Length: 365
Image (cartoon, rainbow, N blue to C red; front, top):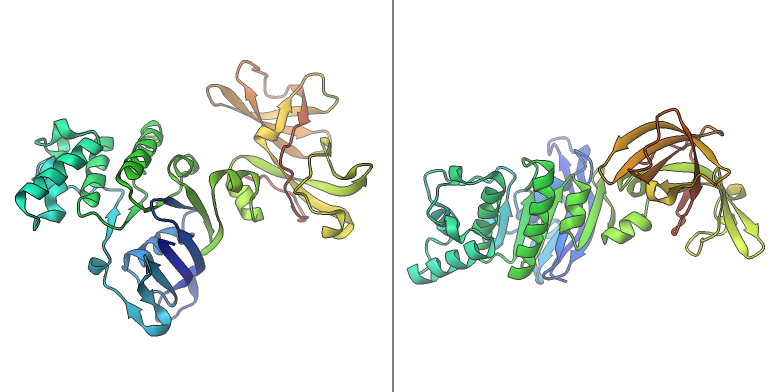
């Protein structure tokens, strides 16, 4: 494996090590893959990036790249950041305003022979689509263009690993998603292995081959986007990714095996669902995502529209059932119902995901 982290921990402050910024992180990233760390503010994702970069020393665990040990707490081994051959891209670009775009890209390879340096700069500016702007100053470019320059500059010395810390956070929403897709293309075309930190799920899905969800310093799941969404490994991941709710349910025996009784009726596609004996009395909470709930006027199950959010092609409805439970639903935007209106809904769940019952089932978003 290209990048390997094993049992990595970091505690602050060092004088009184009580709070774990990173706790027991183990993960592996293949060569050429793009990994993404996502989670709420303060979950430890940037601290983990700093450990990999060598800006922090781990309290426990080890870091390896291509079989080379860069840090090992047990052996008190720590390779200096400048010796790790790791590039970094920050959210503030940090371009030199007095240098041209080409000179910014060339900054980290100033000791290369001139012809080789110029060829590398030309190649990278072409790769990021800014060959026409080589002689311009940074202030003459848009925010998205400046971030692509920062990416080209980080790639110039041919780092074996590229780290990106919230690289799109200062950009507007539409530009963030487009630039995230462009950056993924650039990384793939350059064959660069990368690890990126973000708080934006759409950004993570657009960029990452594998995504790690962090919570309170721990890695809850390290998986592809499809698995995170449809097969979350923990209740936290289920609630953090996407829109949805946890509804009280019961797994019971049915004529064909077992099924899940929910406020919206029985769910039968339960191939990955545990047996009723997995929970006391079969009682559990089932994850119902907004795309699991279908608007159907012919359905006997009715729900009151409490809130609606226009999303262009669809509405996101928050609905309250007669029983008091709330669910969420993505509904095509031409189905423009009013808040306070009752509509018919039904559950159409392809992946039934259950967790141990909690006293009060809560919204999952």
